[in-house]
Amino acid sequence: MLFFLPVMVSCSIFGGGVYNDPRVSAQAEIVDLREVELKEAKQREKAAKQRLKAAKHELSALKSQAKRGY
Image (cartoon, rainbow, N blue to C red; front, side, top):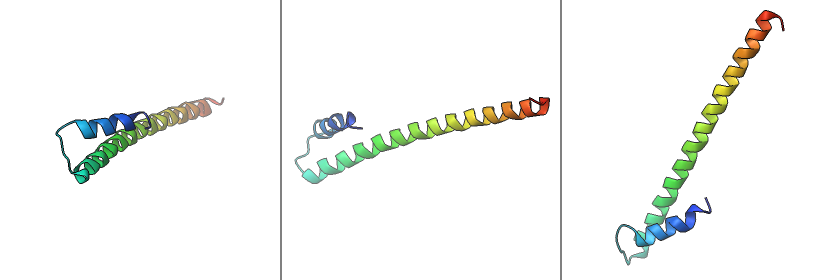
């Protein structure tokens, strides 16, 4: 997150168009921040899904072992 902040700020200020209104710049920065938050949330969701899948596989393996008497 800290790495992206300077990039976001520079893109907000210099990218798109030149606005002298500080409200526009501030809102553009908020939008950029929310986009980064969304990307991070998607990455966390993907990781959680992978952990769930691994736990299900582990459960399946343990059930198979239990059936065989191990």
